[in-house]
Image 1 (spheres, rainbow over the protein chains, first blue to last red):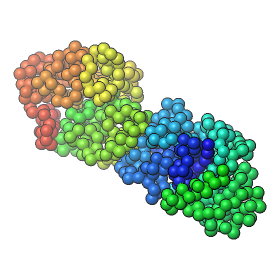
Image 2 (image 1 turned 90 degrees about the vertical axis):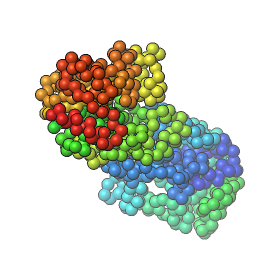
Image 3 (image 1 turned 135 degrees about the vertical axis):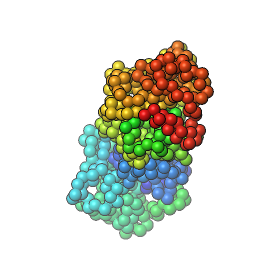
Image 4 (image 1 turned 30 degrees about the horizontal axis):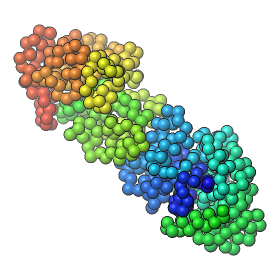
Length: 306
Length: 306
């Protein structure tokens, strides 16, 4: 059994390779929900959707999110009605959010709704939200505190970050099966996702970090930072804003208290020694996933730690 | 000032002609909301939308409802997720329902939301829901009691009707401006809509019928029944189920306690005398609205009562 901790695009790409070489049924993915946002009264779970759409191979690969070939007639129409449309929801994608919201309003838990959505997409991998409880990532800037999506999508990650707040983190419980999955795995992969707002949020949920520490699994992380730059997203701005160095080493240090192995890119070969001094088994390989072959190679590399 | 009482398609067609010959600003339309239904947690107001889309000239004229050229990508996707899709919602049309639901959930009244939607469509006519309160039309059949839309759309109006129930009717208050519009009009038009579940519902709302009776306006109705058959919809089945004759006369009798004038189709010329005996001024003309010219001619005919 393998369990992965995942954010959005980077994680989804890696997992897409992984399920080509392991039985998808043997994989559980614990997904960040700190990015979840209510748009027009609809519950949108961006990372859950990116992971599900990617594994179902319906994702719009040029964007990394949304559904390939989707149309935006709904969005155009609601813009004419006066609502903001900076968060791009396609017509097919919208069905996922309407379905999720309707089910949640019927009292069904997010984890159950996620299981229903992933089943309807034909997925055999178990996709779990990190929590069924409210957990919202807020970004603190000199001007104001805002939802992570407002910071990232609406304002293009242009604001200086002076802090990150996780609303609900002190009481959010892991979704059912989350701790079980960690406990019963032989390999736990920390996907190449944002260490603060994707993996960091998952680690904030009560019991997850302790269970990781106690677990006998091989715990392997792939650095989302290559040569001091994130492959995608604002990880550099968040790390810098919180006073961290922007480097693979910095990521390794954030995970060092539970991690066994760390995979860095060829571009960071010189970092190897410094990271090994954190007590980690470090491997250097190509971590840029441009093709399916890249993804599979990286997945094989990670599996080799078993 | 003119006020119209309206249901869906028949009313919308008539009003479409009327606004070609009167200043739309001088028209107020009070619309049935007994058909409103919650689909996927979204508040759908079929008659309000038909009237708004028709007056905005974006309606799908072949169907009489929905938006011309709309796509159904959302509906296809939510069907794959396992939800029923007998109520056809297009992608652009969906924006109206999502907008309405979001605003209602913000505590805004349906009448205010309707004003916002009609403004965004560029309408100058005042479109009012009959009530801002819950008012739901249920059809009683030998098998079960069901929402009107389930009877009409899902089951194709095939069940025998043994009764009609208006849930909430005993407490529903007219939306603000409804009674004022009736009181301040010189002409009140009862559109050629279903007498039971479109006009009948409006007349059930507290104060509306009394205000109509007291009003000094000319009150004119157009028969929705021609030669014993409704132009569209299940009016015949509902009338028969409730023990009424299916005829223009029967409609006139339903409205006789507040009506002044009644317009019947050429096909019903022989009914004229019988209806006049109800104390009504009866006019006979073509009431079938196939073309815009038909609609305008009918509107002119109705205006002639002034």
